[in-house]
Length: 67
Image (cartoon, rainbow, N blue to C red; front, side):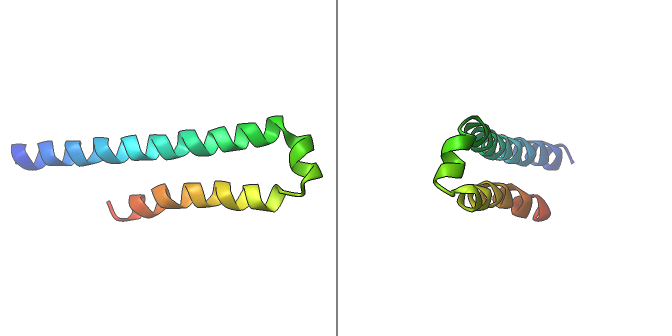
């Protein structure tokens, strides 16, 4: 049981690090888009940025279902 518990902790911490990186990057994209909203609107890239943000968050969600 000790080995199984240690393995579980290791897997969860690995998953948490991957998830944290994904959320940090997606937050960075969202903040940059909000700060440069005039440029985004002028180039009509709202949908592209929304899809990019959404796709960045899909991977951690998929991984969470498999835990």
